[in-house]
Length: 426
Ligand code: GDP
Ligand code: IMO
Ligand code: MG
Image 1 (tube, rainbow, N blue to C red):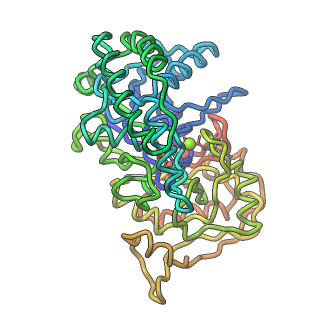
Image 2 (image 1 turned 45 degrees about the horizontal axis):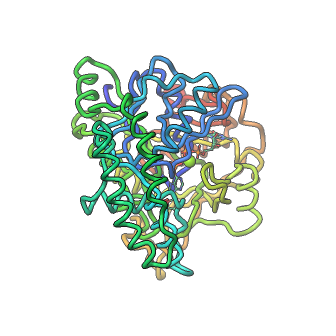
Image 3 (image 1 turned 90 degrees about the horizontal axis):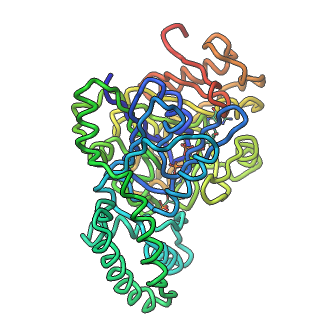
């Protein structure tokens, strides 16, 4: 199994990092393929909790080379702050490789992000305000600055100055405050010099590793339904978190990928605006948020929560060629008397099996539920399938039946070892 992709199957924060931390034991290379510091990937090791925004989640193993591949947009202040914090906590980041072809984020991207959100009035997307959309927009309109540009630091500094001055005209015209040009050039020149030792032609590096027989893990950020093409547009991010994005974002062709793990919570959450058919806006939703500690890792925002939606997950299988699911946070459902699973939608009085193509149609979708008895007991100590309460086993089997791919990993707690491998013995 040389290449495995891990992709969020819902709207993000499914627990991807914990699963990557688990799979990284068998993968000497772990590469992030898209997104930027809008991601918040949590790994809990013993009493230590790490929230990563840019560094791949395999960084905790000294056997792993972490790679930030070409599809990622890199905010240098965040990257070096993260490296320094990890280093101070005893995690060695020296092996980190940053693609020469990754695009950099600058303060003017964050200004544009904020101005665009303000301009949307009541129709805000609820972005993380990290400048992700504007940075990808600059990439698409071919005015972005590549990480590799720092190799010639003088021309890099000149390019930063030129872009900053040009963007300031647009920012001030839109009513925003101009970015301080001299400060930005000075800061990024210093960070650019520091970046030089991490630069790598990651496309050739990954292919050389592949040729040498190293299993590679491709770490998705965000999620399927935040995908620019396939998510609930415009309430999406500005990259392709779906498995196809792993190819473009690393330079690895699709025939090299043979395992695609979709990560889903045992329920659904979303942070930011946009349609959410199985959302619970009542006391049950509050319970999911409280027990699941559903507050954003990056922005601290309260997430929205609802029941598991198998219509979404079936579509995630199609979009990503999922070979399996990892179902996380099963323990969060431990106290619920009844557990509902959305297995279909009713739209305008008709039963619908396929995920609707347009968000305005999805807004009208009423979930069709199957109700299961809750197990009302502690699942957190389960380590083998047979340790799980029978009702929890029935819940997992219903997911497999509804979604059409096997569940392989079940999360029963935030800590590294809190999981059950669900498989043929179940
Ligand atoms: P990611 O963005 O997909 O990597 O997920 P986040 O780290 O943003 O959010 C997932 C949260 O759930 C983190 O706080 C994790 O520590 C936590 N978590 C992951 N798996 C489990 C699990 O199986 N049970 C519980 N209770 N928490 C989990
Ligand atoms: P991880 O990798 C959850 C959401 C934002 C917003 C939309 C667009 O931790 O799962 P952006 O700043 O990307 O332009 O915001 O996408 N969003 C996430 N939601 N988890 C994430 O990452 C997210 N990254 C972006 O809340 O709705
Ligand atoms: Mg997250």
